[in-house]
Image (cartoon, rainbow, N blue to C red; front, side, top):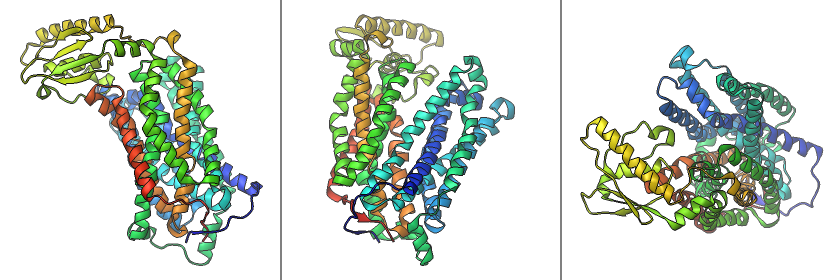
Length: 556
């Protein structure tokens, strides 16, 4: 069982320890590379595997399949966590790596919908589920393996290398995709070139497996096995006994939930916000985020090292606090830097919709799908007209039964009720209404897209780096803390589940949840309430219940 020991004197990492860190981290980078390829190429996947429906619905189905990989991560944590506590750390994450690599490679070979019909998307979703299960088992194994090789006084530093792998995997997937695009015409990439990054994964798999096969089992697990002290029922011990279940809940709600939303806000939602809300062109947004990732990634190591000096809890709690307190002003500054014309228009000519609340429905559909949905009520037509231009607005309740109005500064545009109208008459009036809204929005200075010449790119990168530093603060020390919270008999199982519930569900669904909030309220900043509330709750609960784990011995 974990206990507090006097720390041994400081020492430099041995060759064996460096090999453990390097091999474990490289393998985990590869797994994240595979996992994120799908999201980066979702548009092409929708075209080839969901072509039996219209293009917009196909894109939504492709994104749903991407989300499925996040949804099953906790189940992978349970399955492979149990195997890791019974069979061993090394062999388990060899299995998870093989599953991830083979399923990714098969995506590159999978026939399209046109070739094998509905079997294509079904197989694709099954492969995506296998990827999610594999990733659910990989992280806990790699983090536990490295931590159990690390000396007590350097555990935060050693495990922080594992924490860089998700960012490096994302970075690697973007680089491979960009290199593949540049090596062939756009038509060839759309037709078959998108498969190349998936097929390359088989080479990465072979290299990573060979490197990991050179490793020996964790010394902690070897000692437990030699003494016959491994758990026979790690699931029951982890989640059926209240003392350990309490630690699982503390890990989830007092640390990982906040860490997850800060991580996904800094690395994913910021990119989405630049492209979708601020209308920055995709290439510029990708480049600026990539630069910020390159600058910010070393801070994972910095904060892992610092957690060995001052503790895990202070750094994670500070990261959550800074995120909760500064996200709104930071994203406001990002708006000013990336699209100053939009910021000025929002300030000088704010947009509001005055409507009977009973006349308004929830409009939650990405831009590609909106064109296929017909809204008829006056409120829905007003919202849809603004959503088509991605204009931020506030809602004001109007008298029951009254027709909705759009106020753009001092200009008022009356909406209309399309219920019961003939289709042609409805289309004509909708077109006239949209033209009136567009004219008012244009007159008020709302831009169609961000002007690259007006962007303050150094400031944008600087703000993205700040967001990345928050990510590093909460994520750098988290592996060491999770390993230290749980006893070695059930460590793999116990730490994996809260990590993957937090990062797979709280974090993985953050972009969708934040987008839903924006769609419901009309305000482009309101999606930030989700990470702010979760990070704030984790801060309060963590200050009250999360123990400090630095200096704990994790040996058996």
